[in-house]
Length: 129
Image (cartoon, rainbow, N blue to C red; front, side):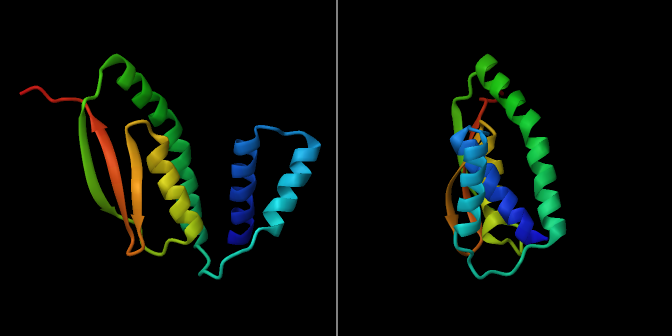
């Protein structure tokens, strides 16, 4: 099952990069997806995949909300933190985690450490005392 989710993830990235849903591009995308090498990793649990995909759905309205906040109220303060990644993450799930963090306008992942940590840059609105 997670093999299908990996293929779906690769196809989604392909279509986002090309922005073309013609039949020729679909055939090329499927071909590229199937020909790309697969690393030998432990398969992600279906529960982890579904949870992460649910977080993607929640992140879309959050991204719009944050974009409007930034336009209406400038954010001048910055904060860099190191956050622990969730346990048992496959490379595909780590990619989705980084995508989720970076998708919202107020955050970006600056670095992923192999020990399972993300270095995250935040912008914040100045809190007046």
